[in-house]
Image 1 (cartoon, rainbow, N blue to C red):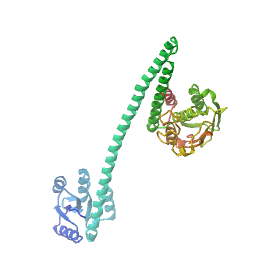
Image 2 (image 1 turned 135 degrees about the horizontal axis):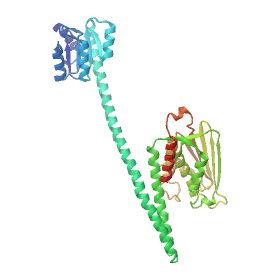
Image 3 (image 1 turned 90 degrees about the vertical axis):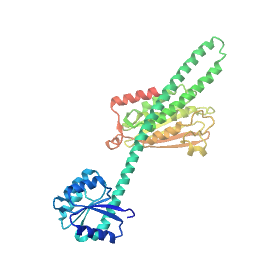
Image 4 (image 1 turned 180 degrees about the vertical axis):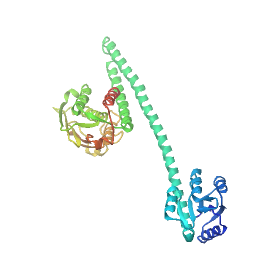
Length: 398
């Protein structure tokens, strides 16, 4: 040991203390000792002295190691307490260890005392370091939770405070268009440009909100009508430019009830379907979007295939990166597919993309069917009331 050990010795025999000091000196330990032999001196030393180790004889005229151990434990000190005594039963020694002593050494075998002290000190130091690390981690965790809570509040506030004025501006544009019709549609082109810009900003805000909710909101598992969920998403996008030109072919085979997180599935469907519509190939005589879903006991296998403009294979490894845009025709923020991958990972599933220029794009997604009790135990399960509330939240946020 490099440090000077301050050792408190509870011992009524001066000769025994000298023997202990001889053994420790012979082991090249750097130490100082203080001997006490009664309750009052022991208590005073615990409170007034800087102590690194306690060595306690078992039997003193008016005091014993069991009482000393109880006083030591009550003091809250985190230092080694080693019983150094004459012959005691093995049962007594084991009980002392169970009650909080670090070790025991028989006076007939004091050669083991230096190693017992070193090991006990090092173990206590390791425990103290671990406790400090845990305390620091707990503080960091609490701070992180505070930051996340504030960030959530900020994201929702920004979403509401920015999207509400956007809706108002879009409403004003429509009113202005109506007035402009009476004057020969002189500003109609400008109104269209303004509306387009507003919609882009609104889409970006929705993507940011989706990302925040997916990153921080726990999974809420409920029974899902997956065909209805696909149909709902298609209906929401029926007025997107080009949607009416695309043939939608939907095939759903539900051999088992499907349980998952409805909000995240809706986010996945929304982004993939909207991309298929946004990047359909105008040069093709019959643009299509084929959605094929098979639900088994273990999983839901989903494929979204379109014959749109496609993606250069050189970019396929990057399409799920945040802010990456594979085509100059992309007027979004580059968050859509990143959010898709994040949502799939939250569901503990996999997503794969196949694409080629002018040949179209296929997304292959597998997510577990969380219908078994073993799988459901890993997640928060929605009650019917919560499921309805989540659906309303998803509706209002879109």
